[in-house]
View: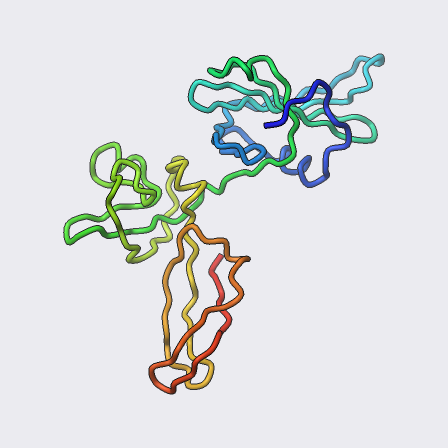
Length: 224
């Protein structure tokens, strides 16, 4: 994470809008860092001092294990500035520093549970940390089940009322593939769920139809 002694003015409009819409309870990734931050507090304050060029500021309290950072959005008459302050950090090289902020990603916590199977009696849900805590299930990311392999069997559109496994939310987002048919004879070829996949990177699916022999690439569509 790059460190700076002064904040670069003129934050990008998209970054400003993202920070303005963040609320307590959201989960963030800042600058693509390995840490996943919980937003525990949001404070907005107008600055009415006529000698101060600032108009207002929005401060977010970020928590990740033993680290506490502050993400600050400052509004000026003609631009915004964004900075990240290390308030408490187990890494002494970070403590008290101010960092540049280039990107903020708000993780989607409204992710459907995915049922995966690792055997006749083993079924695990994603993301379901509550069930994992009681020994009834484990996240699809494999946390606590190192070395085991699972296959996804179905997707349940169930939205948990609590934050899911952070590793699942960040790295193992499931994407539902709409049914694929042969373009020549309309035979159903496949459907299912792709995991850890970026849909925008997929241009098509290479298939060989067992019914008519079509061999080529077909377009694929994903459910939102």
